[in-house]
Image (cartoon, rainbow, N blue to C red; front, side, top):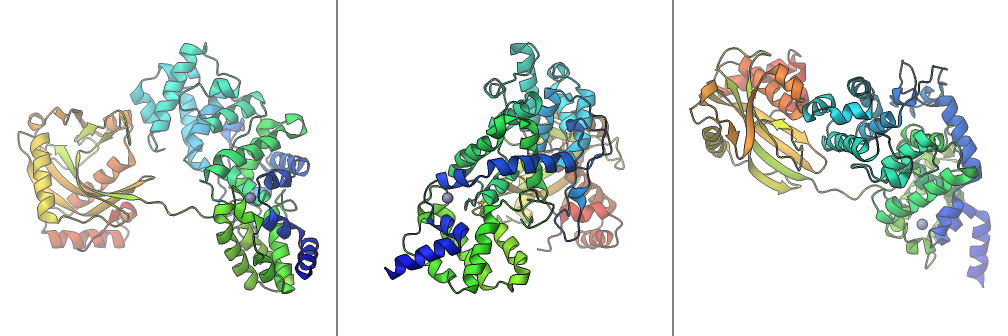
Length: 535
Ligand SMILES: [Zn+2]
């Protein structure tokens, strides 16, 4: 009887925390979504403060950056967008922007989108372009698979859809490279369809708005509950202003509800609606009253059985208790509330990154001083897999490991591997072969490449035209610009150029001079990519 009385008193005193602890189904999250209040707040905020971006039809200047928006005193997101001539952006233009923004920051995308739309103003222009023209315009954005899918999708629109983008989610999903996110974005932004979209920003906003104690890769949240919540939000109020509503949630996630968003900022349109901050305030009040430990220690808390929160609930509650235990007095409560707000979504489980160590050979034609006219021997990658169809310096795998730094087989083994590779690439022989000091690092999403570089000169007729079934070609700076060269190739050329400046000095002397050059700023680009190894 006593315990029943206690828990009912707690439920009344701490309603948000009690409901969160007791919930055991996803219905709780759906019901906690304040559709009627959130929609007008989001739309009003978005219309007043949204970023000016070319694919929204805005004229320059653009303000894609969100840096520092949550720093104390910042008013960056409160500056109203000035009225500007809103041009009509085609559904194709929206499609391009959505694909470009998927793995690249908005401010970095702006110049690429403008150049792309100038080169390929319509879906017909893109469909008619060559693979090399497409890659050249994409070069620097990374994740080249996106460019290839966009190109293939454009051909599909021209061949199968009479040159018009489909106007429904189902129709758009038939295009290559278009998944539920991109289909929902194009359908809602260009055609006003009340279709949900879910990306990392939306997942963050919804997890805080509806107190979802999950990380953003958990399928029960990312593939199911979040789409249900986003659909309910965009379909609310008759489904009007679908494009603006979707963009408002994403924009909020990129600005005031970024990972460092506080949930308490007066500029935040959802500040009164976040379930995260309501739970936090209840937990702090319970801590002050000496009730929190008893609340969290209740047997059979429902939250541990929620299909979405269950796996992460113990972790979240431990963090919540830690914040509450160290909380400042009530007058400064917002700091602790913001800490709890920032606990959601939960951190991702640690990802295993594969490590691969390569020997790369940079062979140039002739032995004249390096210049933009210097031709380098590059090989084309296979048409599938990582960096499909891109040009690179030929390389051979030395070692591969998970997590730990792969073992360096040593200079002698590297020299042997380099010799084998050079015999294949330049059967006619090479001159001035030398090892570049240090290593280059390049990180992709699941793999980190550590590269040792060997440099050699070779006569034009001494080189092979094919290597391991791949096309090999001499390329100078102009030709590289034409095909669109990757950041990895640029790193290697920069490292060889720096190496060449040290002349044919002995290895140790060369090392010292490279280091001195980096330190006094004469080679500012070096320090960014050229990792010195003293081993
Ligand atoms: Zn739950």
